Length: 316
Image (tube, rainbow, N blue to C red; front, side):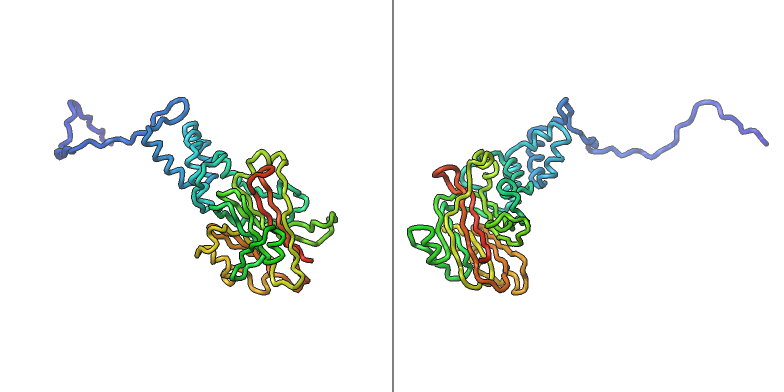
C-alpha cells in the first residue's frame, strides 16, 4: 500500500470572499445582575414585572414569590393583590381604604372558607359560593319575594315590615364588597343527627369579616331580627338582598327575570343570581304547607355596622 506523502512548509490560507461589514454590532442578551438576594432589576423592570404579576392568579403569585427574594418582595406589593381581588370578584374599588392587607383579603375570599366553618360546623351539610356584590349605600332591602312590583315597606319596625310585605329595610349596613354563599344546614329545632330536615340559608358577609378580631374571638354573634311564616303552599324558597340606592338599576332588574335563572318546575337544585348590587337565591319545592323565613344579622359590636346577613327558609 503506497505511503501518503507528507506535506511540509507553511499552510496556505484558503481564499474566501470579502466579508461584509455590519452597520451596527449585534448586542448580546443581558441577564439581570445577581446579588445575594437574587436578581437586581432596575426600577423600570420592576414596574414591568408588577404589571405582569397582575395577569396571574393567587396560586401562581405564591409560586413566583418562592423563586427568589426579589420576587418575594415584589409579590408583597399590595397594589397587585388589590388588583387581583377586584378582578376576580368582579366588583369596583371601595371608596374607603381597606382596613386589612389586600393579600389577606384575597386569601380569606378564595381559600374555601365560609361562615359555618367558624359557627356551628356540626350543623353544616353543604354550600356553594355565589359570588361578590357591591353595597354603595348603607341601606339594604331584604325579601323572600321575587315578584314585581316590589313593595317597599314603610312600617316602623322590621317585624311589622315582614308581616305586611314580606320584606324589610335594614340600615347601618357596612358599605363595600360583600361575598354571598348559599348554605345548606341541618334542622335548627332539634339536636338529632338522624333528622332529615334541612334549612336553606342565603349567607352574605362583608369581605373584611373573617379578619376582624371580634369575629375571630367569638364576641360578635348573629342576632335574630325577624321571623315570617308563610302558611300556604309556596313554589320555591327564595331570598334576596338589594342595595336600596340601586334598586331600580337595569342590572338589578335581572334578578326579577326569573326565567333566565330559576330552575324549571321539576328541577330541585338550588339556583342563584348575582348582579353588581344585588344577590338572590331560589330552590323549587314540592307540595308543602308553607315556609318559615328567619332574618339574622351580625354587627361589629354593640351599635356597630351590620357586617353579615342571613336569610333562612325552613319548611313548616
